[in-house]
Each structure stands twice: as C-alpha cells, then as structure tokens.
Length: 448
Image (tube, rainbow, N blue to C red):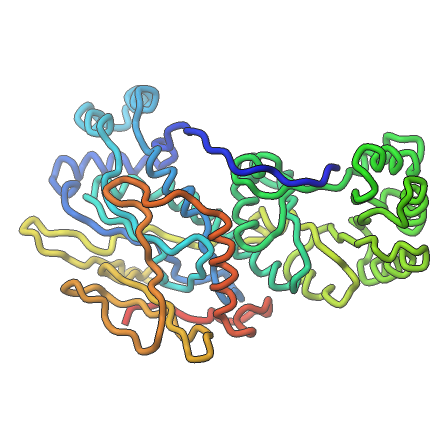
C-alpha cells in the first residue's frame, strides 16, 4: 500500500538460455553439421502473417530481452551433461555446442515500434547452424512481450491521457509478470505494482491496499487510520470492502483527523462503474474532498476503458487483460529461413508455399513511409538485390536497426527511449488506426 518510485534499474548476469529450446532443433542441427548445410551463410526473419482479429497494429517489445538471451545462449557443463544423459545428440555435436556462441548479426525493429502483417521485425544473419538454434527462445520472448505491449498500447489509447497502473502479477507466471510489466510500461502505462519489475527495469512502482487489510481490522475506520498513519494522507484508500458510499464517508473523516480535506485517492474495485463512479465523485465533492482522485480497477480492458471514458475517473489499474492470453491474443510471430548461400557462394531465396503458411523469400529492408501531414501512408518492405534497397515513393524512415554485430550487442537497453519511440510511432497513425475499434490492419508489409 505504499506509493513511490524505484531508483535506476539494476543488471545481473543470468543463467544460460541454451536449453530454452525445443528438442527437434538439436538433432536437426546435428544433421546440418554433418552434411555441410550448417556452415552456409543464412538469413532468418521474424514476422507475423496476420494480426489478431480486429487489431490495427502490433507493438514490438522484448528486443532487449532477445539480445540478452542470445548473448547468454551458451552450453556450459550442466547443459551439455543434460543433453548427454538424454542422448539428444552425439559426441561431435556436443563438442560443437561446447564452443558455441552467436557470432552473427541481428537487425531489428526498435522496442516500441509498430508492426503489421509481414513486417520483418527481426533479421538474423549468421551461418545456418548458429542461427537456427535461436528460434524457440527468440519466439518465446517476442510472442509474449509483443502481445502484452499491443494490448497495453490499446488501453493507453482508450484511457485518453489518464494514467494506467499495471497490476497483473497474480495472473501469470512470476517471471512473465516482470516481462509483462516492462512491456506495458514501454507501451505507455505509468507504473507497475510489481517490485521486481521496478528493481530490474527501473519502472515506477505503486500500490493501494488490499481487502484483507481492511478485514483484519475491527472496522474500516481503524484500517484507514492505520494506513494513513503509515503512508500519509496522500495514500489511496480502498473503499469498496463493505459499502462504497460508507467507505468514502469514512475515508474523508479519517483524512480530516490527519488535517486533510480528503485522502489522496480512493480506489473502487467492484460494482457497476456507470453507477458507482458518478456517485462517488458527487459524494467526495459534497464532502469537500474535491482534490481526492478516483482510481478504477476490476477486469478492465481497452474496450471497457473506452466505454467508461465519460466517467469522472482519474486513473485505471489493469491486470488480467494485460498479462494473460485472454487479454492479449497471440502475436503469431514465426521465425523463418528466407535466404541461404549455395556451396558456390551465391545467395538463394527460400520460402514456404504451404496453404495458410506462406512466407516471402529474400533478405529485406523496411521503411515507414510518411505523408506531408506526418501520418504514415505505408509500410514499405523491399527485397535487397545487389546491395540496393529499392526506392521510396514518399519520405520515410528505416525500421531495421543493428542490435547485434558479430555477436556483440550494439547498445544497452533504454526503456525510456523505447517509451518515447512508441509514443512517436503511434502518433504517426491516423486516429482511426489507433482507435480501439475493430478493423483491418493499417498496412500490410508484403514486399514489392
């Protein structure tokens, strides 16, 4: 129930990510090492064939985590022993894995960038064997973080300037909760309730109180006095444990005992907002607590926030719909080989043609084209042929930037820069495309 912010982020060296993969990757790797394909220069690409139904855009998040996972993708004694015990691969491949580290290049859309069907949001250039084993861990990170960020971005749009708190830690895996808090903050949420996310990523942390705290005291007044005594009159009091109107009256009376006209805020977590929020605002104003803010929580998603936008709410707390699959439909990202060298050194484009799972071969460059009014007019993806990138039909900006060069990260993560980039990228969309109203994607990024 404390309100505050954390100092800067902290970083620690993590464990190996090498076994965060699917079993079939390694036997396939072994075969390519034996037949020579593993040594051929290759290009892999991450993209989605379609956005979740009704979504106008996707949001890139987790690129910093991808870079970190790639750097830590090393096979130490414990990982090699596990593979040996389970007879996943033979001795020759184990020897190769013992010396493995990624030495290739990765280009990617920036964290916070928008993407659309067929946007090449991550491009890996490396020998086939080095690149193919990264598929699962890269997709695990990006499919989760991009989905959370897209849902959070839509909620920010729906909130129309009112602050949002991410509070979904109890609805997901404990480590996923930290990643989700980062993705939501990147997309515009103002704070998280998760202390580990605050420590790891430097995200502001905040909180209110719990119903159990109120229930543990003899009555609501005693609970409020205890909280105000500990946290100060600027704290947020949870007023819906018993009766909302009575809770508000008690909250104001307790705040006055401590010399204030009312608490800093009241949180409402139940009831019909259409009825209880206007009544709460009117009651607070009538009691003279005109400066007390109202924070609304309880199963909020972008659609509900949008429908409730006319209410006198000062901020929202969202949890389940941010961090769980029901709130953030899967991003549908895939990791596909798009080009590979031939034994004589030429480059061969490759693509899937199976029904419903088509891919487009060839290494690509991507640009966001902008009109004279500053709004995006297209997502232009062009095949790189003979070193040329094609031509733009309108002013635009390049979307793929280097994040790993010869196995080394290009720059450290900058969460505040990613937040700023996301705000700017969303502002490039026309109002229709950034609304929460269901509709087709703003653009389709198929090469041409």
